[in-house]
Image 1 (cartoon, one colour):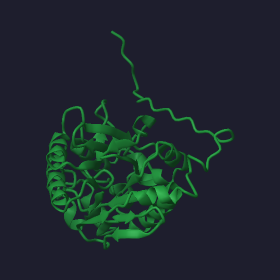
Image 2 (cartoon, rainbow, N blue to C red):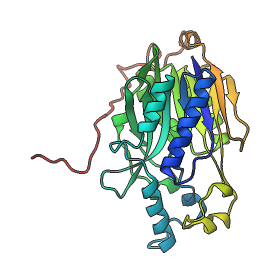
Image 3 (cartoon, rainbow, N blue to C red):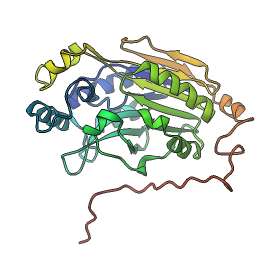
Image 4 (cartoon, rainbow, N blue to C red):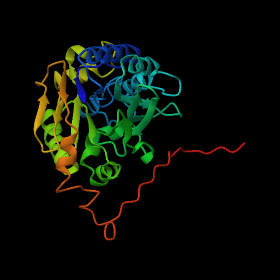
Amino acid sequence: MKVASVQHAPVYLDRDATIAKVVDLVAEAAGEGAELIAFPETFVAGYPSWADFTNASAFDDPAQKQAFSQYLDSAVDVGRGDLDPVVAASAEHGLFVYLGIAERSTSGGSIYCTLAAIHPERGVVGTHRKLKPTYGERLMWADGDGAGLRAHEFAGTKVSGLNCWENWMPLARAAMYAQGPEVHVATWPGSPEISADISRFVAMEGRLFVISSGAILRDEHLPDDLAVREAMLDTHHRFASGGAIIVAPDGTVLAAAEKHEETIIYADLDLSLVREARQNFDPTGHYSRPDVLQLNVDRQRRDPATFTD
């Protein structure tokens, strides 16, 4: 299986333009023979970097409120069909797509950090909402649930995916390993040092291939009308520097992108290496003790209200 990992900048806070870019990148990867492609965390339509680079926790600050409103306007409504162009591109080119999106809640006033899984024949087969936003993200994103903790079948292979620091959550990883994935996708906002370490660790612990994808974000990518643009530029000019990397089950790095470079990296995966690696260690198989240690996973979609008419 040939896989691709995207290290690009979104068209920041422009949902439709970023989706158009995703469609182009899917076509580009297909032209290189890829069968699966991974995009960064909340690639559509951008990671809320101002949470870390401005006074985002200021209460009732007009600029912060306006920036959040702009972020809501750029968020994805899956039910409305916002991802239809990506679904069509996946079908046209035969690629399984893992796409990080900022997903707008039903209430219209909150955002989930969501990893959408798109099958070329079945369309959107999964929307995993990040279980616990990290640090400044908690000002921007709501807590997700376990509904998306699912591995997916594609081309005779099982694939799984988690958002960013979920890959550091032992039980979230265990929930995925228990479903037998051979390929795991890890999405990142653009932090090469972090993604490199954890990608190698997950690959060796899970005895699987890991595809990590990270975004690029610099001052020239910020729209002129972003309410906190000047506050961001007062602190930094580079807000995300990539982190795309592909790792084999033994921790060998098969491909890695240069920091700050907009590119797609590729690797050909020999899936027999997964079976070989599990000969001496299978974390949720022969090297587990379910009689002593067990994990219960609630995969219900949690909504704030249930209506009975």
